[in-house]
Every structure is written in structure tokens, then in C-alpha cells.
Image 1 (cartoon, rainbow, N blue to C red):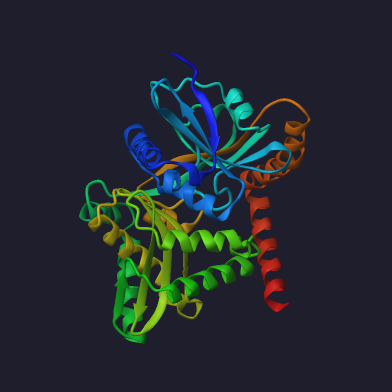
Image 2: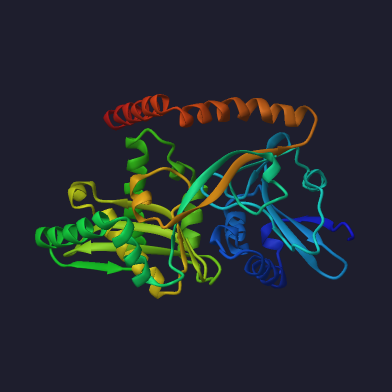
Length: 363
């Protein structure tokens, strides 16, 4: 098979036929068309970041693949949207694309490409993964009724306590109202404020301190693409907003992204109420998979029906630029891995982050 020619373009230079072929390749090569892997997500990142690029792999007649990436200083590359993207990799035709990963790096002027949510099946990059993580999911292929039956069999207390909390919250504040696709910019601003406060309170990095992240969310909130559009789901009690979630959806996959709630009503579990209603509405709108994303959380384990696997690591070439990338990233990655794998260290890290958050709030 002929080695494809590789052209580097900015996402805005992708043609309508590129967009169609990109998404068709995703449709035919993966059962779960995650919106983070859509052409539209890459285009949105390209509108808010000047370092966004796409390697277009061309065969004899037409493109046979696309590799979105960001290129920084010293030839250090990152997955497109790294830091907020929950699914990463290349979009390749399984029969026509025969590619040497180091050839791809040279064509992209990269000596390293870093990823932290590489999807399974990305065989070009999996040999360079150094970590493997569960991404909890809800399988809705059989519909919401089948999912409720799953909860009754595997997480009966979740369903029972959530319904009880719904009744308690309604008695306390008024009738509950759920909106699956809210279009109010003011509600989105409230959600972002809640989420930023949560990041600060828990001592974690707040992505919204980077202007491009807020701009990206605004762009995607306005998108109407069937392959990648923002969905703002909201729970009201009476006239009061108590919980909200902003995620991305394709035709069949809803990727959870930014959930939060009003802390003053935390005892009523508004987040769990929101998620249960959101999953029901997602199933009714054609969603077949809800992806909670990488990361440990009790609520994810309660709602999930299974797990997908994602990977982190970096593909590096040889030379001083690649060595510099290793020195900057691998010691920190190894330290994080050590903490994750030892419960005592993990607990100490969580306590430290909370202490940092308390200092931030009091400052």
C-alpha cells in the first residue's frame, strides 16, 4: 500500500468535503462517535488557539485520514484541546492508511506528541502509552427502561434515594423542572462560576482561568452540528436553578464535561437528580452511550454500566527536543502515577489539595 502524502493545514482550511469524510471515517471505524473526535471540535479549537493544526493524509484520489494536534515551542506537540478534551487520537482509514508514527511526527514538525485521553483502538499511538484509565459509561443501546432495570439490579439504593431526594427538594423549594437543552447564556455563566469555585475549593487547576477554554465553551454552546454540539442540561426547583451540566453530544454519544450544583442545597443531592433525568432525556433523544470521562468519583461508579479505557503518554522522536520534553513531563507523570497507585499517598494528596483550596477561599 502506498504511503500517504501528508499536508499540514489550519483547521479553518478544512473543506466541506474534508468535514464530511472525517466524520464518515469516524462513523465507519468506531462504534462510539465521541464528539471530541469530530472535525467540528477541532475546528472550534482552531478558532480559539493559533497553535492548532491538522495533518491531512492523502492517498491517490482523496484524503485517507486526519491527525489534529497543537504545536508549541521546541516542537512539543499536544493532543488537540489537551486539558479539556476527553477523547484523543487520529482519524484514519483502516485499509488505506499505512503510516509510520515517526514519519507523521516529522511531517508535523514535532519531536513529541502528548496525550492523556487517547481512545482504545488508536494502535498507531498505543505503544507509547504509559498509563491506562477507566472512563465510566452508561450503555443506553437498549433504552432507558433497560437502564433502570440495570440500576435496580446493581445499584438499587441509587435509584431509591435519588427519587426520595427529588420529593424532599420539591417540598423544600417547589416543583422540580428539568430542561435537557437550555439555551440561556446566563445559566451557562452561572454553571461556569459554580465550577470555577469548585476547582478553587478543592485545590485543583481551574481551566476557565485560560480565556481560550471559556471561548471554546461559548462556541460549542452555539453549535448545532449533529457531530458535535453543546448541550446544557438544567434542574430547577421552583424558580431556582439548583444544578446544571454542560456536555458535548454527537448523534449517539453524550460526553459529560462540566457538571456542578448550588452548594447551599447539597444535602438534597441535586447533582444526582440532574444526572438521572439527563440520562433519561439523552436516551429519548437518540443517545446510546453516556461517557462520564476519566477520573474516579463515587457518583460515576453508581451510575455506570461499564467502562471504556483511555490512555496517557507521549510519542517522542530522538534528539534534544524530545529529551527536553521527557525531562519536563515524565518525572511529574511518574510522581502522579505513584500517588494514584498507593491509597495512603492518594489520601494525603487529596487532603493537601483541600487545604490549598481553603487557603485560596480565605485569601
